[in-house]
View 1 (tube, protein in one colour):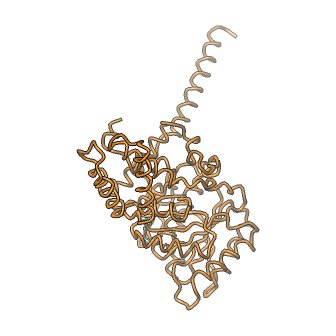
View 2 (spheres, rainbow, N blue to C red):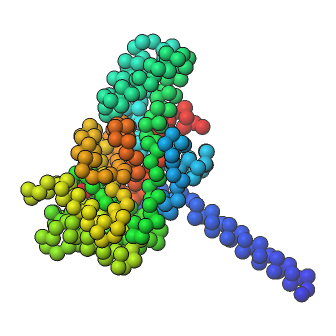
View 3 (cartoon, protein in one colour):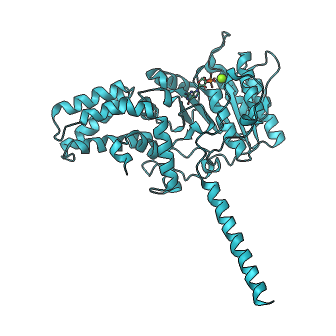
Length: 399
Ligand SMILES: Nc1nc2c(ncn2[C@@H]2O[C@H](COP(=O)(O)OP(=O)(O)O)[C@@H](O)[C@H]2O)c(=O)[nH]1
Ligand SMILES: [Mg+2]
């Protein structure tokens, strides 16, 4: 070859490498500011082009590959993201937006307890205690925070008020990181079966749609089970989402029992080679049958259709219901072997402290938090990101 031909070949190779690197960089860019909004039940059934396109979501693969956090070890996801990584910064700032009400409401109030205080006077702990209680943290968890502060004071570990703030933040992280195996650590099962439970209006169906959208965008074969058979509207709502997300929904014949519908759905998923099956359930029954009994049957039906299923049983709790969420968790946990909690509508509360109470009282891992109605507003829970976002002060934002 002539020198000119060599030069042309070299230029082509350099250009190809540049295009490849540019493409990879594009793939890593954050989702656009205004991504597709998930359809709501009231929006009519006609699928729109916008809704058909799955919203850009963080990788569901990450759910399955996160390292298992052992009790007392670093919170899940720390190794996956790395200290100060761009991904962590992005997650924290998105969470801050979602937690805006809590941050400007309850957390601002907590921060104001410290304003102008350098010394630690006896009234400081009283003020902190009162503020924690107003944020839905609950009496037991508030006591745990205050006892922790007192013990540090006795050990003379807290030189000034700012150290008290840091101690609260550290204790919040300890409470939220319950040391459970990462979500999806059993996602190697095929099909991976998720059972969604919770009272009516908590956000089960919306969360299912958000999760389905996430897995679908990852190229996973998803099947939804319409296990909330007691309200025709509930089945219709799930079907509408299925249409919009282009994900099949298995529904039963009229008057079919929810256990039977979920059994059929899981069996169908096995036969069709589905990767993920997400089952919706009722939150309240019009019949005399007790809800918990029905849910137990649904759970058993999953295992009959696919041994080992369900791999995750997620309790969906509405953060705006405060201490009610705690009594719901207590009730559901008595009957069902829950594997985690989804806390929805954190964007709709100025308190937000209930998340600490749930994690502390039940030692149940929070798997996802809902901070809005768009698909990317379902955020995979990371205790460190969450605490950073919650305890961020304006001064921290300047960093
Ligand atoms: N703002 C906000 N609304 C939510 C969130 N999650 C669910 N919702 C809304 O809560 C309402 C009830 O949700 P739905 O999924 O039907 O509850 P279900 O009865 O448990 O299935 C719907 O209007 C949802 O759009 C969230 O994270 N933030
Ligand atoms: Mg529903």
